Image (cartoon, rainbow, N blue to C red):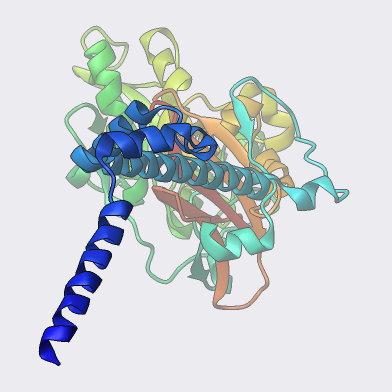
Length: 408
């Protein structure tokens, strides 16, 4: 039984091997067979290109990755640049829109100046929201301060309100060497003495002349009475009325007024070797008239304002009012009587009066009406380097603030 089955197994193996051999063909036969098939030509018409592409993809894969990364980076940089340009454009647009004074454009407010000299710049209208938010600081004053300060008006109609203890100092003890004073009993406000020192130092630097003398300063009521009685006795009532105010109505009570003289030596018509001459503001002394406003002084009683002041021309009488106010008064040709009314047209929230000194300092001046109560808040520009608050001795306050310099 076993021998009978073996041939069959061998036969089956031979048969299977024969089938396998019949299915296996040589490479040349397979190639010929594919070449004869119509589908083979459509799938790979160029075998060389297929092999080259496969080689490129498998041999240098990192090159393709670098190209893709570079492309992504370029896209990211381009997107960032676009976003940055848009942000800059939006920011500039917002700044421009916020800088426009929309309230002024759509309101009936006007900015008509009182006058327009060449060296005056008028400030813009400032809304309450703006000045309250970030442009303003406040200084508290009491009601009686309308009677104090370098701009108080004292004349025939407006008396001086005396203090119990006047805050005045000896000029002799505080002056520089560029001028003289008659005695140690001449007193002025310290604010005025400092300004006088600056002016006289500048005059001496220009002329090398130290002959200007301060002849008179602060006077109390008793001293003013003595001066008035002396002029009345020597020169008569008409002269006294023209040149000397009665006690209580004299600028010398303020401590901001002085009389100048010229001290000289030599061939004089009086006995002795020294004397004082009237200061007439002529020759080299004309410099004082031309430059005193740069230091805060004005010639108080000029010839052209006799009908306003009711005081005859006094070439020797100078009044300290502060630089900003002195520049304005000189530039507009105003007496102090006229100035206290003129400045009422200028307010902190409206149009302020701007003027520039010779050294480039820019001052703004304006008026604040007194509310008659203690603790009143006076607005001051936050950008002010310094400021001066003065009562006008009538109804309000005059503010002069140094707000900048043209050269800075």
